[in-house]
Image (cartoon, rainbow over all chains, first blue to last red; front, side, top):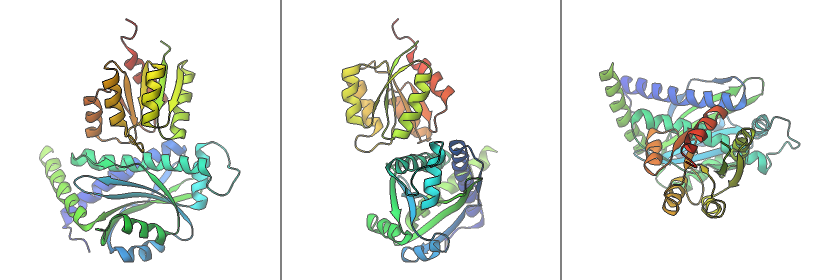
Length: 208
Length: 123
């Protein structure tokens, strides 16, 4: 699994909690509903085994907003909801039920922007706390099965042989929308992230 | 004061929300959905202030900001972005932005930033 000592695991968990917490707060503000966020988990997988692991949670047709990031560490941040949840989430933003049960172009655009706000905020916390700059790419919306989506990530990043997944599920109260936020890194990027987290932890302790 | 404001954002949702906030305060609003259109519209319409997204396909917001400032060194630009990094804010400031707003945009913050950005206009 991941070679983290106890102190590193605690520091990384704290960083992720702050980042995902802000993301949930933004989602709550956007939707006008309370958002419940499960505690984030960190796990490591061969990229070929990732679909099997995540498939335990995500079944059927899904909608993904993917935002790549580059810098001292690189990877993909992903917002994932099922198709029904995607339609509901976009309808919350237009303040009324949508005609179609399918995600139309207007709904897709709304969901892409929601993904942009959430994922950029999450990545921004990493950049701010670690005092590093992360270049965030334009968000992309994908629809399909989880395995197809993960295959597209592999093709886009030939270096991605082994992935570290930092993820958490969220639920928007009273709306029935359930989704997932994930950050996928290569192992080499995780190592650089851990170095930065070590430095952040050291600075934080010194400051206190 | 009431101003002519150009919103530059590739998200129609964001443009719609921001337009609503600005028009409710009496401002005149035009929109551009990408950087190239924004540069053309700036030249044609001479807005008092530009509200500019950073993460856009094609020409990114920072490049748009630099080109606007090359075209008009007095161009008044407020950056509105989901990228909350302090380093991004610094880059926007160095490139000449007069304000920096994080998405989701709040009405009062937007109007305060616009009023601040308009200070000194027509004086």
